[in-house]
Length: 418
Ligand SMILES: CC(=O)N[C@H]1[C@@H](OP(=O)(O)OP(=O)(O)OC[C@H]2O[C@@H](n3ccc(=O)[nH]c3=O)[C@H](O)[C@@H]2O)O[C@H](CO)[C@@H](O)[C@@H]1O
Ligand SMILES: C=C(OP(=O)(O)O)C(=O)O
Image (cartoon, rainbow, N blue to C red; front, side, top):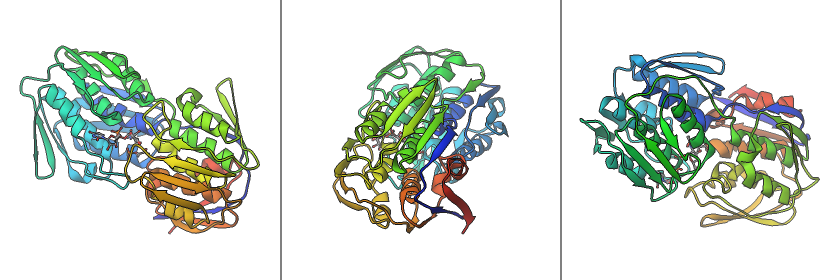
């Protein structure tokens, strides 16, 4: 297991390029399973979760070729419809194969993903949607089995909660169901629109992805297509916070600032200067940020995936900020680690009150989940002295070459085997 060692206190300066989106690549690679034949997906980040996705597809019989940021997925060779516990337990998004396999082959059996560090994360909305499309669902021995002997039939599905994975799952399944489906109270995250663009490229008829009502005219089959994945908005937001927390001056290339409005406005309220010229976003941190409050919400609200990184920034702000987490019930595990840097944070229910301190001091810390790891990196970059972050395999799930990219901006950061 590797660890990261950071000598903090350097202002980040220079240019960095954002990788392709993890959270768009996962469903897009899985959607390739809907069409017999080979799809070539580009701008796929080289991450642990993507390797898991490739293994998952291979375990179904698909033929995968990977070269740098390109993945060629031949789903014509899929010969089993079962995804086992070993794969699903390492990556929750694996459950998204259930609907596509069911839609294409009439049957699928996938391990239940179970909870994870940040919350219980049930899949009741996914299953409710598949049932509405005519699937018979049984839960046995830790597996979900879905059967639709005569194929899936279009339906109107009204989600009880805004669910990104649920919306993606039902959009994929409905793409080759018979007739029209309407997804209401659908999630609006940009990754959903990206997936819809890929499905439409394969011949699907989907309208409204990115709004809360998605209309899908089922087609009898999809054909493979080439597709370039959107940039990773959470990686981009993490670099924006890295510039802000170090009082740096960073140009971020390849990102879409319009995907990060909620974060951008909060950073500007905190005194961060943000300009966008010709798709290069320049972020200049203030001497010390001002405290601002945030509440996480489904898109276009403030992303829960940016909450931990923003909290790191608030740890050194002038004043006190209140951070409310409204998406996941246990997404404050970074708090006790931030306290090891000398941060002043108290948690009550789903709110954390962060009283900014002038300086953090480097400390040995442990990563507990993906974005918590990113927040510890940010704290380490700003802190005086040395920070050692253990269990960075969490970080490797979602950030491509983060230490190389940060070192390119002048950070003193290195990866060493533990
Ligand atoms: C791979 C991927 O894209 N992951 C993202 C996706 O996760 P994921 O798709 O798992 O998150 P959801 O949007 O589904 O979850 C949002 C909330 O709805 C609840 N829920 C969800 C489904 C369901 O059937 N029942 C239910 O109650 C969840 O427990 C959670 O409280 O969106 C999250 C919310 O933006 C992000 O933090 C994750 O980074
Ligand atoms: C929580 C995340 O991912 P996942 O849904 O794959 O756990 C994330 O990307 O921050």
